[in-house]
Structures are given as structure tokens and as C-alpha cells.
Amino acid sequence: MNQSRLVCLVLVSLVWQCPVFYSSPVTTGPDTSSQNDVDCPSSCALAFPNSTSTTKDTVDQEGLNMTSRKLNPKFYEASRAGHAIQHYINTIYSSPFRLYTVTQIHNARTEDMGESGMKYFLEFSVKDIVGESSEGRCSAEVLYPRGETQHPPQVQCSCDGLPRVNTSDKEQAFYQQYSANSNAVTVNNLPDSHGHMEPDMVPFWHLGCLAASFVMLNESNENTLYNMAQVSKLKQLKSEDDQLNFEYEVLLHEMVSQEIIRWKLLITWSPAKSVKVLESVLLPRCRCN
Ligand SMILES: *[C@@H]1O[C@H](CO)[C@@H](O)[C@H](O)[C@H]1NC(C)=O
Ligand SMILES: *[C@@H]1O[C@H](CO)[C@@H](O)[C@H](O)[C@H]1NC(C)=O
Ligand SMILES: *[C@@H]1O[C@H](CO)[C@@H](O)[C@H](O)[C@H]1NC(C)=O
Ligand SMILES: *[C@@H]1O[C@H](CO)[C@@H](O)[C@H](O)[C@H]1NC(C)=O
Image (tube, rainbow, N blue to C red):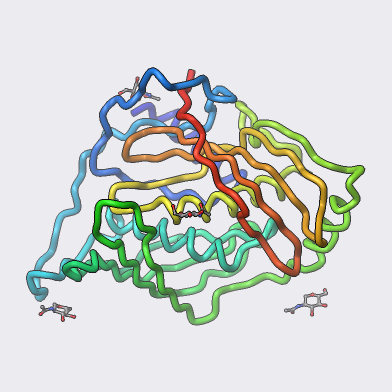
């Protein structure tokens, strides 16, 4: 692994505050590039380095029965469930000025639920990295259903006070600024291939991360680990019914297969109704140059 690249990417993600945390996938996937690949809309500057780690969680079976397993909270299996929880929390509580990230997992275990699937129990800390809130402590259960077809993990989460900074003034100002359609935004590559973003574009990046969380949660299973890589295209559409309307194209990095996956998302947002994903379309896979 190229360490300087990793450090650089970690810094970029710290600067731009899309919830990302790093962990070691179990395997690096096979080369899945196919004839159908198209060039990515950008240079995939934020594509993450290949993982060289094949670390499988070391299991401490002590005191547990056959169906239950304690996980190392720092390892891949726990952090994968942590990602699903983070996406879940963001789909419910986030805004262009508030994005939650799981900062640390304290305890993790699984329990095989037979036909209904594999359940993960996590205790973790979470904070709003945009509003720079304090940390809150939560616990959650994540059930990955079994079966041939993709079913999103079912997440149940409880927190003793999810930290929340009041961002209603910022949200109102953002809404007012962009609800006048004369200001309609069209922009590519947030952040750009050097990791830069204009300050007034940052809320659009957060909105893209938030919208992508709906898809990342929906597409997650025990063999995936998604992170947001880039907003490759953003076009504001005509506002309707007091909602801002956007068409996003986002690049997601799937760490297990090392693929960059593109989705087109039609979303609405307003301070009152928050984010809704009206349409999500998987686009042809792209190839990073
Ligand atoms: C990742 O792995 C693929 C295939 O194994 C290789 O072609 C590519 O150059 C690697 N990328 C990086 C950033 O190391
Ligand atoms: C296994 O252990 C877990 C946790 O201690 C417990 O909740 C569960 O009921 C046990 N399952 C069986 C089949 O004994
Ligand atoms: C947030 O702040 C606004 C104005 O600054 C205030 O009107 C509103 O009641 C506050 N909301 C909460 C939940 O504290
Ligand atoms: C989630 O997946 C279901 C089934 O594939 C699909 O109908 C739904 O539109 C998806 N939602 C999002 C936000 O991608």
C-alpha cells in the first residue's frame, strides 16, 4: 500500500468531513473490470488505495456459545456494521450542516439468528463532524438478512442523547439562497482531483454524502463496505412544492471489491422535510485512470 497516498486521502477526508473511517477488508476482490466499463467522469482522485490486508477477525470465543461471537471492535467485521449504522443515523438525523460519523466502536459481537440472518451488536461513540458536536454514546443492532437477493441490513439504534448542534439558521439561509431559481447550481467534481472545494459548495457535498447514505445502506450486506468518494456531477433542478430539487451523480468506493460505483440520484431537500431520495439509478461501472 502506498502510505503517502493513504495519508493524503485521510487528510482530504478530514478536511471535507464526509464520514469515512478506515478499516481492513477481508479480501481484495478479483479484477472485475469488464468490457462495459466507461471512463470515470473524473480522474477518481479520491479513489482509495487498495488494501493489502487480509486480516480476518481473531475471535475470542471465551464465555460465548456456538452461535455468538465476540469481535475485535477495531477490525473489519465490526467496522462494516459500524458503517451500516452510520448510514442509518445519517438518513434520519443529518442535514447539509450535520453529518454523523461513528468515531469509535467499543464493543462488538455477532449472533447467528439462523434463517433470519446474522445479527451484530455494537456499542460505539458518534459525533456530528460538521457541527463539531460532542460525542454521544450509542448501542445498535444490525441484522443482515440471509438470502439470494439483496436486502438492506435492518438497524435499530438507541443513544443516550445523540449530540445535536442547532443548525436551523444555516439551513434556512441555504434554502433561501438556492430556492430562488436564478441561482441554480451546476457543478462537477466535489471535491476536485486536488481535493479542493469552494466553501459555498461544501453544503452540497454534505447533501451528496447524506443522499448517498440512503443508497449505501440499501446496498449493504455482509460482503460490502461502501464509502462516499466524490460527487461527480450536481445539477439543481426547478424547485417544486417548497422543496429544492437536485440531480446528483455520486461515486461510491466499495472497499471489498475495490470498485468505484456510480449512482444517479434525484433528491429533494428542505429544512422542514429534510432529504428524500426520489429515484436512484445504478450507472455503468467506471474505470479510474
Ligand atoms: C489496485 O489494484 C489493481 C488490480 O489489483 C491495480 O491495477 C491498481 O493499480 C491498484 N491501485 C492502487 C491505487 O494501488
Ligand atoms: C448464545 O449466547 C447469547 C449471548 O450470551 C444468548 O443471547 C443466546 O441466547 C445464546 N444462544 C443459545 C442458542 O444458547
Ligand atoms: C434553533 O435556533 C433557532 C434560532 O436561532 C430557534 O428559533 C430554534 O427554536 C432553535 N431550535 C432548537 C431545537 O433549539
Ligand atoms: C432500495 O432498494 C429497493 C429494492 O431494490 C429499491 O426499490 C429502492 O428504490 C432503493 N432505495 C434507494 C434509496 O436506493
